[in-house]
Image (tube, rainbow, N blue to C red; front, side, top):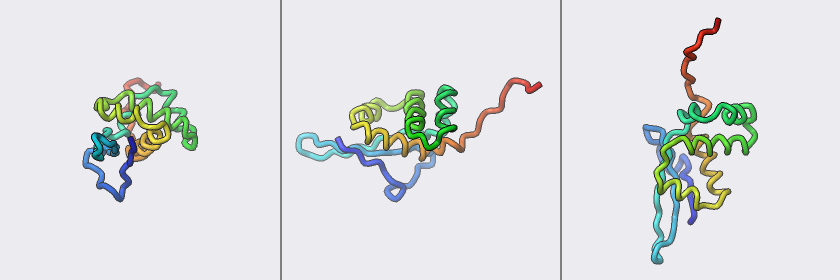
Amino acid sequence: MSTTPKEPADHKPKKDGQFTFTTTEVVDGKKKVKTHTLQNAGPLALKVPGGVSMDAILEPENETAQLRLGLAMLMVTDVPKDTMAALRSMPSDEMMTILLRWLNHGQVDNVSLPESSGSSD
């Protein structure tokens, strides 16, 4: 299965901020292209463990920390079964490329944090 993450020149962002990528496979000698969708990554940053977020924020150049954040965010969302199956079946380098593009697409650094309910006495 080969994958082709869509570049900005290939598509217009959806209003809801979803990220799309395509996979291609050959079924019965015919090429089949399928589009997969992941929801906007930004709001998901608030649902992952704090340590994962801190590592990614404190070391933005550390690709491993960014991928760990991406995987954690992927696990806290409702990814359609066929999309998760597509991600799991691709070679690791392709999957990691898609995860990093998804994170960049979601602009995780622009997430508005909720106000604290505790007092700051």
